[in-house]
Structure formats: structure tokens, C-alpha cells
Image (cartoon, rainbow, N blue to C red; front, side, top):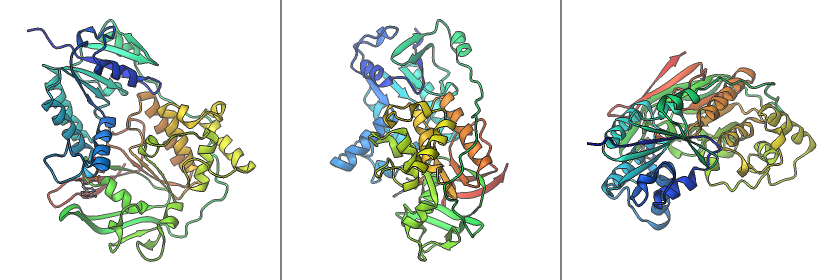
Length: 416
Ligand SMILES: Nc1ncnc2c1ncn2[C@@H]1O[C@H](COP(=O)(O)OP(=O)(O)OP(=O)(O)O)[C@@H](O)[C@H]1O
């Protein structure tokens, strides 16, 4: 029997992969992929999950979650991906296009999905678009790179790997200081003491005790569905689950006076979803300055001092030449650097980065990690970095590891 041909397509933050995917799914003939013309394909991607989520929320149409009462939105990333994959398999497609299939997944779920995809790839053609070379499935037989909208074929697997090695990256310059430092009296920013959380009678977190102090650098790690987002949303005030629990933020017991707005002033927050639905018709300069006004995008005239500070940040990020570009014109990697500068410009006591490298290519992730390490070294800001992937090169002082148990996740501190 002839071996199935599977196609790896390396993408980076300047690849126009939307067009390529549309052509594949419209059954057009694409050079190098001719055998797929007139075949039926399915799409396995984050955007597809979001499309189904929209269907549920706006039109009340449950497709991926037909067999459960839970909504797609409240499922963990792993649960959402499983639901999409079984839907695609039931559709009996001839081929599947996978877009960064392992993003947002913890190590164990990644490895399960990897096994499942390799098994599928033995009989069904896979086209894997990958931003990270380490994600490329071992069943791939054909290798391409998508540069802008140009598909570059590699004559062999070896030539592909040789051409795509990574080098380490450094920033030049220092982290610009804040306009007005925010002074905190209390040395402890976050203190969970035996906090448990349940949803619909099912316990998700079991007696969490976690203390985060001034200047700490933490990585929060845990499998999909272990409760990382739930923990973070109690800190940022986006979940009411923290009230009535033994949780103190910046020295004040949650629910005893401080408004969510007061809390948000002390926290810089970034997660890639923040800009997914954002039009981005603001210049880079205004985006960075907007962090001083707690908005995304600037809706007031900036002062000269604010402009000077934004200039320093953009110079550090090597984006000063693009200061008048619109945010939407940037690559995904550059957008995240700008959003981090925006979150960091006032040097908040706490900076939370929720899966900030998901979907970035190797170069983009390495640059992002270098910026976070630099912020940790050169500022007094406490960092909580959430990521499933042990980012090569990230230097946290501690890991807070959530481990799933039948009665909810328990947490362990690991000093690095
Ligand atoms: N509002 C909600 N209603 C019902 N269940 C919920 C709700 N929010 C979260 N859950 C459930 O709680 C568990 C923990 O979810 P959470 O999103 O905090 O995990 P996570 O570690 O952030 O996952 P991931 O890494 O996939 O994002 C999951 O089983 C999820 O389905």
C-alpha cells in the first residue's frame, strides 16, 4: 500500500496562511498539493473553535457540544480541541488542515493529541501549519515554508531542518522607568489560603495555598482544565469566585472594600485573546501610551511626556521606525511585544501574562521570552507567566504547578 503523504508547512508571523487554507478547502489546485484538488478537507484550528463558540453564543446552535450540557466557552482548551477533532473525524474528510494544533495545550494533552494525529496521519492526509519547528509531527513526509504568500518547497526533510535552526536573541537598551512609581506597602501581592472552587457542584481547585511576593517571577503550570484561568480570574477580579474565600490581594482581603477598578490599576495583564477581536486602528505609539490610561487604544490626546516614554519603549522593542503604523499592520509577534509594553509602561506591581507565546513562531516566542526575562531583571514588577510549554530560555524563580486530582487540582511550589 502506498504511504500517505503528509505536508508540514512552516509559518512565521508574516505568513498569509488564510489564503492558503481557503484555497485548500475550496479544492483549488496548489503547486505541490495537486493531489488534494477536488478532495474534501476539514479545518482544525483555534479560529474554527471560536467560530463554533460564536454559533453557540449568538445563535444558540450547539454543534461541538451536542452531547454535553457544558458550553464550549467554559471548556478547557484541551476539551475544546478534542470536541473539534471528533467532529471533524465524524465528517469523514479526505484531509485535515491543522493550524498550530498544540497551542494552549499542556505537555500531557499535547502528547495525547500528537499520538492521535500520528495515527490519523497514517491513513488520512494531514497538512500541518506549524509556527514552531518542534511541533512538527513525525509523520510528515513533505516540507514547505510559507513566506508571505509564497510557498517554498524543500527537496528533502534534511534540507528543511538544516535551513530552520534557531539562534538566541537579546534586546539592546534598558527597560524605561515609570512616570510615577506605584508604591506598595504590603510585601505580599497575592495570598490564597486553602481556597477551593467548584463549578456546578464539581470541585476544580482543592485547598490552594499560594503566596506571591513583591518582585517574584512565577510560571504557573498545569494541564488543560486544571484551573489556571480560574485562579488568574480570581486575582484580576474577573471572577466572583474569590469572594468569601481566604484570598488577599495587595494586602487586602478580597471583597473587603477594594473595587475591581482599584485592583485592575495595580495589575498589567496580557493574553493574546485581548487583541483577537480588536480592530487595531490605533498607532503603535498610542497603543503603548494607552497602558497609562487603562484602555486598549488611546481615546485622549497624549502629553509630550507620555510620547517620550512611548518612544523609549518602542526604541527598546526596535519598533520606533514603525511608531506611526497602525497596530493591525504589525506581525503577531510584534503585536505581543507592543501589548506587553502597554501592560508594563506604568510598572504595575503585578504583570500577568496568560499563554502569551501561544501561536507565535520560534523567533517570535524567543523574542517575547527575552523581553519578559529583561522585565524580570530590570524592574520591581512581579510576574506571573502562564504557559504549558516550558519555554526554552525563560528564567522564572518559581513554578506553581497545578496537578489534577479527582477532588480538584492541588498546587505545589517548585523553587527553580
Ligand atoms: N464558568 C464555568 N462553568 C462551568 N465550568 C467551568 C467554568 N469555568 C471553568 N470551568 C471548568 O473548570 C475547569 C478549569 O478550567 P480553567 O479554564 O480554569 O482551566 P485551565 O487550566 O485554564 O485550562 P486551559 O489550560 O485549557 O485554558 C475546566 O474543567 C472547565 O471546564
